[in-house]
Length: 236
Length: 236
DNA sequence: CCATGAAAACTAACATGTTAGTCAACCAGA
DNA sequence: TCTGGTTGACTAACATGTTAGTTTTCATGG
Image (cartoon, rainbow over all chains, first blue to last red; front, side, top):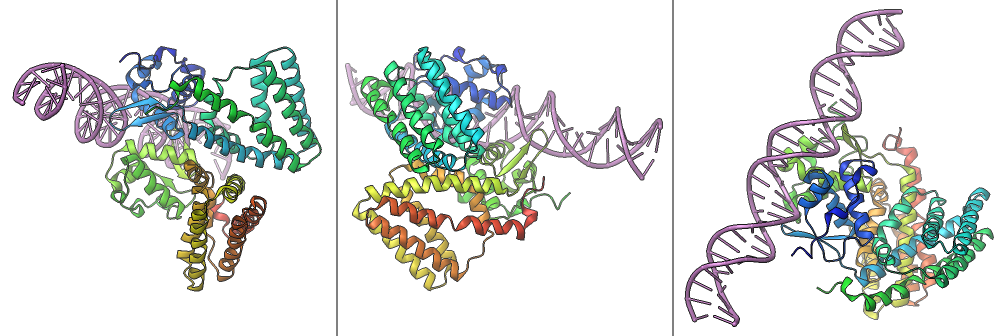
């Protein structure tokens, strides 16, 4: 009973965020789910969440509705809400959608980029190199995220990043289970380098190939997780 | 005052839909916005909507929140909600996102399709031919939609269609302004034929080129609208 | 011991009351 | 006439009360 419930005290204080109350609650819950502080299958009860965050049920309901829309929670009508299990189908689909958007982005950027934009991308890559040398994996993860964010930003389409993030939320959550290793970080660096080289050469086709290869490295590593941590994958 | 308000009586009865009340209200409002029964800039007041649909403010609020998330309405905090103006930037972005997803889909389908799937696609194409011959543009529009829906369905990724629809809602709305012409229908048919030919040959690359060409026909026609109907485009 | 079903307890969904932010109309003063 | 501030009406956002559907519990009969 209690073991299947989330621990609402692990929600971070919402005063750190801005926007409407509902949006703050949404961010707090999403963060807890993505960071696996709330585990798949655990039940989210509005009461404890309201109590912990000091808000009423309205903003919590709205937040949960958005999470349900993103597939991070399953709402059982008139019954309850639980953290969604990992689903290999969802993750594969998220990867496919993400790749479609990344490939289109990198091709456009390779063709249209300004010199200044390329300089920013290249600067980020050099930062990545330093962080790998320092074995700063947390920093590297952040720089990696920013690398992809920069590419999307430079398409000139502001919603792209948001959409890409949304379609691959399940993938993002699964990535949390992957432990960083020196070997993988070095490989990632090389793959990013190939993407940057193609962008430098304004070779859209090569950029797509490099990006496709880079993104293709992720799924096999996630597939392995289904064996290692079967309890997190949908067993219903 | 009243001329800038939506006419809530034009909302269709929600008992036709299923799901939660909030979902029904969402569908009714979205339909009214996409079909241009509610025009850009018009103010949506919860009161009249509640009255018309016979529901309370809760489901209406949730519906509006979703529409705001999709960019179909603009919510001004503590003040009001209005139907979003057309924005060329949004439409261009929606087209880009849609194309990214369509290209990835058609490539995958060209590679992985079963014989039965191809037969279904081909059957749809023959239906399109008949409808064009009959000058049934409404039917042709529907078959066109189904053509693209089939391709996405056959990727095996169920959310793809939903995501593609969501990212290109603004484009869908803009398409409502385009009058169907015999010439364009015939061209569309030829473009679809090229896509199908490539899928028949399992040539992913050719399928992408054909689809890119097909989708590329839309933007110029929409661009022209900004001149014809400037009052619908954002003037802010 | 197990099957069964009634009822209690709990939940999301919905309705309604309340708060606080926004905006336009109005008025005073220049 | 124009400017700047004040006020009041109106709104979304939030809080809370209510309803209806689901699940679990537990007594009863086999």
